[in-house]
Length: 395
Image 1 (tube, rainbow, N blue to C red):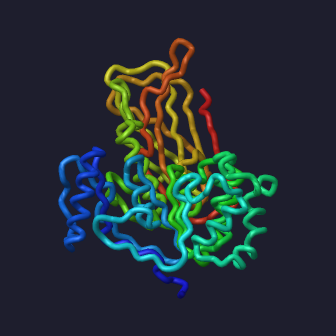
Image 2: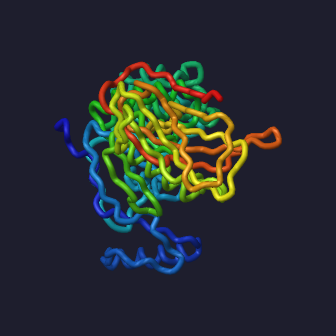
Image 3: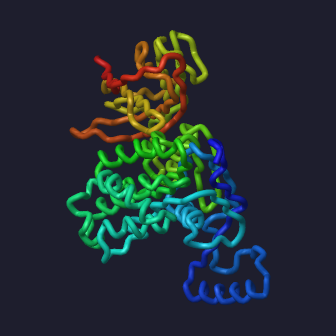
């Protein structure tokens, strides 16, 4: 196969389910009979049915890692099960070249009464490897899983973290052409997760990877393109992972109302200055960065702390500047400027969150919060070493 081979091609993929078991069984019988008669055309939704995935199209090449993101119920797991051949679509086509390794459910593919060692041979056989080939990989798989002491114990006695270790070790060391991972790396310790990501980086040299996670730091670490799903459909498909992550959090704000104001304090805008010049979201590395927050207030507010928080694409807080406790005036135009100085961030894309805290009766309460209010970019030099920056304004 060539280096840029398309290993996964999904065309017009759709799958519907029924919310009621008895109705679902009845529809299944009717569909089976219809299929026997040769009628396999796509049907409209019937009562109590819904689209779990609808009209999905994408290609994935060797060396690419696709981040599949979306909130619970978006259709990610259904799509993965279709790709892995566990369920059939109602419409559309999936073409996959080569061997497929998948970790889409914790413990899936393991026989609980067999030992870890025996399950390695079972899984290797499913992937199409001979016993001799598995023999050659066995020591590497056991070593990677770090389960030498427990490899001959029945898998049913493994913890969830141990199952993840074994499952990923098999999938990684067997070097599949396509690797599908669904959230399972979130189970277990961070050290093994980081070890797994390093392994994925090596796998990507010869494979295509689909990675599903609710952890945006994980997505930003290994993915080079993103699909955001919502209600079974593709909401966004982009090679800009930062844009994909921002869209994910924008959707989260809609679902969870993370972005909220207060009747007495509202954010009007945030201006960005680079060396005292207003810029349209681009700061050159090495120049002074200043953020101007403009608020309005109906009646004013006492003892308020204004904070501006900078997040990177992985939604990790890399810079924070808090004002001292001040009084918000009853006006439509009050400015606060935050001078972060020069060279405070490396080259990348970032998001600005503005928060207003009120101190009353010995407690601090968030009264307004504008998550990922706007995006900006730092251009120029890329620093290898970076430490978070936290500043507090002195009175």
